[in-house]
Image 1 (cartoon, rainbow, N blue to C red):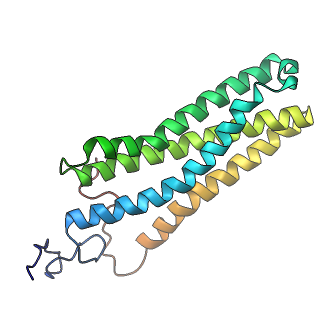
Image 2 (cartoon, one colour; image 1 turned 45 degrees about the vertical axis):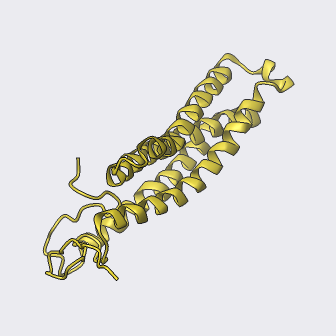
Image 3 (cartoon, rainbow, N blue to C red; image 1 turned 90 degrees about the vertical axis):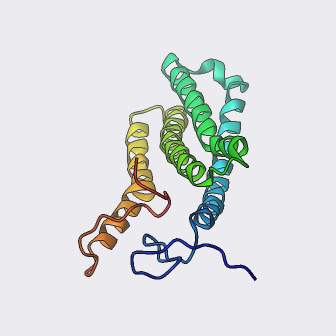
Amino acid sequence: MGRRPRVGGEDGVPGTNPRSGRHETEEERADRQWGDLLQELRVAQTGVQILFGFLLAVVFQPRFADLSTVDRNIYVVTVMLGSATAAALIGPVSYHRLLTGRRMKPQTVIWASRLTKLGLGLLFGTMCSALLLILRVALHNSVALWLVGGMALWFLACWFVFPLWAIARDNRRPGDGGEDPQDPEEPGPRP
């Protein structure tokens, strides 16, 4: 059997990726990262589809006509955020389809990862806006704003603070040499 060419690592072991310690070529790494990203997108896209379906149905409910101007404006903002979220989280599929066969998998993974991060940020805004609309209609008082604020903090903690905290803890491990490791999800230099 023929041997695949491997990229040499910093430690001198042929085929070792210095950022992940794995024995894989750049293309193999991109394939693995693409598979990981697809799994993540499946989870996020399902939630977005359910939320967006709910938002589209709201306008056709009889009580929609009774909403105040403020609540209607919140609804419009929420629908627009939901649309932008869907576009960002479905975007990697289009990006991949249009670039397939052009030997650009590593670049595709980088841009799809960026779109996914943007989509998660938009999803945060969509979720908070939808919660605000629902709780304003349900509670009719300022408690809704406090509840949404608390939930927004929880989303931020779960989606961003905890992962960033894990990265910070990992970077402080003894023996790292003080290097700033690159994100293993994005091959190549950081933009």
